Image (tube, rainbow, N blue to C red; front, side):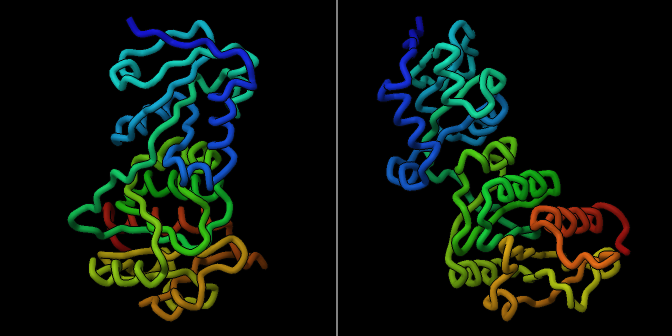
Length: 262
């Protein structure tokens, strides 16, 4: 019979450690662990092969067979305790602590890749994963000072899709070598781009470069882009949220491949 430990005190060392993992990137890196909140998000992480180390759920809630099969340490929490460790409270259903050991392998043939540079807001990075997953992106690369993939807000905003797409962090220089090795055409967006989205044909094997919220892509990627693309906009608006801009180019890429090209 599987036994769980009841936690009621916010001063419990387990609770303190979990909160530290939630709030500090340094703790996540040092301990090679991350906190995943929500039944769906936990299920996605398990599906992709991440190791579940600890599992927390509200007092009285039953534990599913799939969780028991993973053999984590089990903890039931009082309502006050669980609300303290979960951003969504009881609605989250459960909170898991997973190992962050790299498990992803690069697909053999890449033709739809997203590279994000200096994405500061975890919510934006999570939204990028959500759109990329829906648009069939095969791999996501982050460079520069981008927020970490396993920030709780990134996981929550991605609704767990961060666990469904292979993802890696690299320097710009290493990323360029990797993209060239995989024979990908480097495309970026620009207000003065000579290619018009929804009008021109997107290359068969493409990586889209999306820059940070404030400064866009760096000079490095402007210099190494094979082509720059303009997203048509009306009125005097001159920019879009990075997650919105990425969704537009990624879904247009999918549209052109699945349906008639323009």
